Length: 267
Image (tube, rainbow, N blue to C red; front, side, top):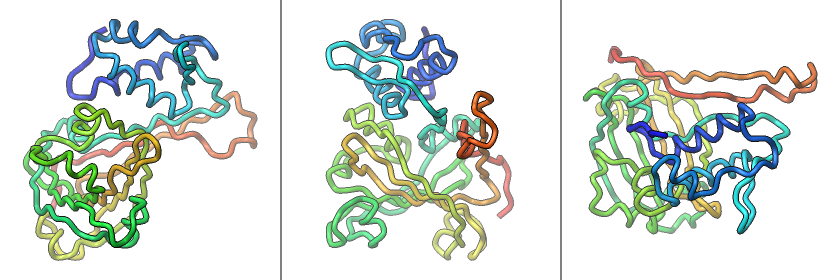
């Protein structure tokens, strides 16, 4: 099976397996192909396959038995299909060319709420990375990212104007980003951010805060992304399970949640 370019290979493999399980091509407790068989099927390394299986295990799609392999888990409630994506992947999906401009990099003691998210003491030094994110050369978002120093040192000498944190951590250091906590709210552009995003000071922005987490609940980074409100909106899709009796659902499972970008926006 040939994988497409533009998205990490392990994500495409987990997508394929997830869809196969949803379509009941594999039954509950049925063993999946081995890591070697999946590697041969997709022409990838066992490390790449292992990352895909780790994602599915975290989502509750499969369980793994030491020495035996991976098996389809019983899922009492339908899982969502929200994916953790980076800016470059979002831009590619929107048909825009992604690029970044580094505004500032520095070492600092984090704000208290950032220290809480990163699970570090407030007087612990962390690395701060500020980047302007562009789509087809036009300003789309401003990112302020805080990283513990153990992860920040892995970014030394990296071209962060064209590369992504996800790719560097996952593909070069085998540090998978398995989950993230998101908070979406509104913010007003201060003078600095307004100038970078080419909007008027005080303009409404879409603020997304997220904390990305790896294995062992290790906090890889905490990020605040300020989107131009005239360039992006988030759409979601909910799916009702017809097999669940009416009135017993505790809310419809989230099937998709992704940003939609406008190609033209007024400042």
